[in-house]
Length: 147
Image 1: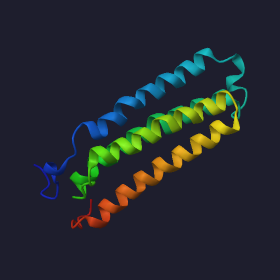
Image 2: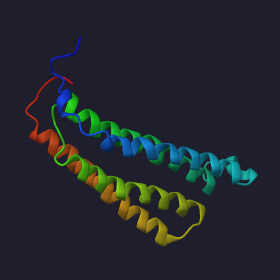
Image 3: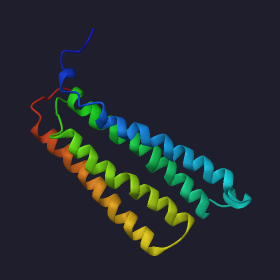
């Protein structure tokens, strides 16, 4: 039996979380390729550039991408807090997030300060856009359920 507090009709289009769910495995594959193609000293220290790249591929590229997509999908359903213009918001976040994580991974593999700076700018933009959209939708929500 469904909980009466769920707002299934407010669920965003599948393309909103789907873009994050579909790009997450790309970062998992990239992490695997880095491990396969890197020299033997990858695990010699936790601070090797290759291991840092793998870690960021998995944590930001895989896990955080899935979490961002899931929050955008579940926020309208569980909290009754739909994100305004969900396709546009998801596109703005995704178009910053994807290159930001890729540039960060590249910056660890081929150290260049400009790569780190560009990745930082794009990551900050994506995170602030995401937080802004989530907080605005929660503020507008009339639902005060426990979920």
